[in-house]
Length: 175
Length: 68
Image (cartoon, rainbow over all chains, first blue to last red; front, side, top):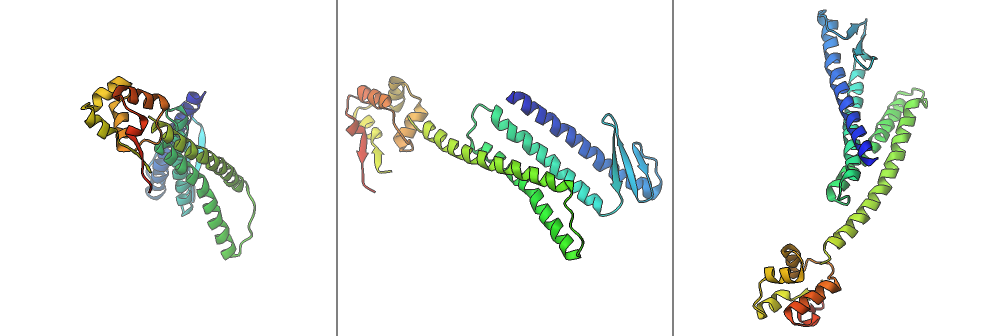
């Protein structure tokens, strides 16, 4: 079961990474099509945005030709690192020796990654307040909440792992 | 730690090599080295018994208490 979860997370990471690279490359190419009128496959250009058709998955990704593309890229980069970290997190369970410094570091990274969306949302809310715009509770905030719940569980598990590491060290140094 | 392992002194007295002792008591030379260097956190009674038997000595001959 643990092995299956690890393999699934590995697959998820590779699929997402390929998708990320594909979208990144074709969003840049779509801008070239928009500017220089060069025909690029999988891309459909409109007035101020384009659509990337992802083969096999049948996804249609909208690419804006403004600064919001940076937000899109940063979000995708974040999830590429997140899935990598998730894969590494599950690797801890399939290893024979669980209570290692390396495992602790992997979990700490995963914990930090789950807290990052909260910082992003805080900045987002502050920017809303500065501009005096009305702040709405949309679906995106529930993703942040889910990340926070995961972060809390990871935090608890990290504590267990730290104590386990101490006991493991004691056991290893008992001759 | 206030407990000092004086195993190397006893080894010198008995003119015995660490490797030979490790072989007799059935632990690895790496673990014996940990024990000798004082890095060990605990010693099993079975290990202590085996050392005492192999070196014909008392636990007090290889363990010493020194106040910090």
